[in-house]
Amino acid sequence: MKVSLAAKITTTDALFVFIPQKKWNKKPFGKLLPMTLEKQITERFKAKDFEGKKGEIIQLFPSFKGAKKTFLVGIGEEKEKSELRKVAGSAIRKVKKGKLEKVTFLLPEKRDVLRVVSGAILGNYEFKIGDTKEQFSPKTLTIVSNEKHSKATLNNEIVLSEATNFTRELINLPANMMTPVILAKKAKKIGKGTALSVKVMGEKAITKLKMGSFAGVGQGSHEESQLIVLEYMGGKKSEKPIAFVGKGVCFDSGGYNIKPTGHIEEMKSDMGGAATVLGLFQWIAKTKPKKNIIGVIGAVENLVSSNAYKPGDYLTAMNGKTIEITNTDAEGRLVLADCLYYAATKYKPMFMIDIATLTGSAIAALGYDITPIMGNNSAKIQQVRNAAEMADEDVWELPITDSFREKVKGGNTDLLNWTPNVSAGSPMAGAFLEQFVEKTPWVHIDTAGTAFHTKSEDAITPKGATGVMVRTLKHLVQA
Image 1 (cartoon, one colour):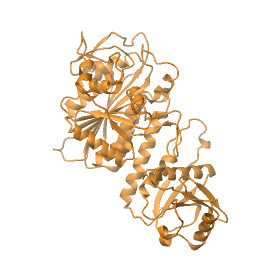
Image 2 (image 1 turned 90 degrees about the vertical axis):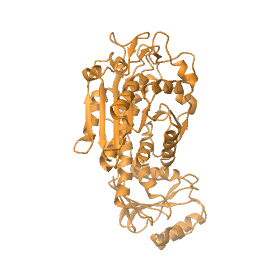
Image 3 (image 1 turned 120 degrees about the vertical axis):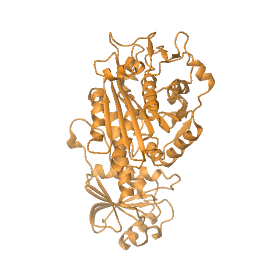
Image 4 (image 1 turned 90 degrees about the horizontal axis):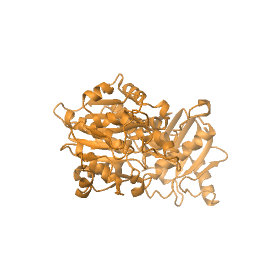
């Protein structure tokens, strides 16, 4: 779908007029609204068959001249800025249902055009494997508004929204179509022909780097684990990079602590952190920010076989710390441990963020709409909060206390990968990861509840992968 901005209405298959929920008047549209349309809208308000409620859509008869179909779209009371994004998604869903190819949105003044752009692109996304003829996408979307934006600003929003959909697609693909090797190929494709460098290392290199924690998780699979490293140096040579580390468990059976029915079916989504990092780097490759940015992804499968690691095994991480495996389903932190240490010691970043679908406790603590964050630097945690607020995404800080730090210590080993009888699993995992970041300012983002929704959906997010945090990480880079 090609998106553009315009200063007036032109010929279109469908015209959608966005109207706030209040007493009707033409003023917010200025000269953009034709008199014939103004009269029709006034009649609809008088008849009380349209009130401008959020998501309310009605069709006008006869249609405005120059448009095959004309619709009124309610944008509600706009108590939250993010509502406009969902309203645009609702309109696009209507477009898709009616298979309308050329579409125009008419907005009142002082409405965020960029939220409408992103809402339309996100609402246009659908995941389907099989008969692709059933999928429909409009060819063009023209947004008519008094608000002006540069081509670069518009392009940035389009690229970001497409990157979010790319992240969704990676997560939604089944595990046999998104293995560690395939994920690595996707990463290389992002970098092809751009200023982004992508290096992929297999199990020999992982072993040579002494990443025993990461290697242990993947030893039960015939699919080779992959260490994916992305480098983008758009800033000054003297400037330290910001590093993003993603958990890429392409399927998580739970290992010998196997997951039960009702949970294991969703475990193709356990590479959500890696997909988010790749979505961010797709945006980076296309928009070329003047920053130095590193991505490190540990791609692996956690399966059961005669070669799989077992409860009671001891693993040695890259930093030399020994880990007793008390639960093979606490595998994500083992992958991240070596990846974090690698990023911290090789690149010495000014700031490091890891993102992972890590703990079920994240859901118990904050549900499916709020993402828990934690870390070792209050200023950096606040930066993530600020970026999330700009992105219209909800985050909440959980604490990593000395009590948690004590509980991750082992008896015969330095660390336990899981500590029994501790309900606060998210900060426990955070305390474990903290052991591998050296002195680097670091924030951990746990998207276990927010990255993949099997039961709920809305106008911009169908069931399945949400693409959460891509937008937050983008704002973090720009800040």
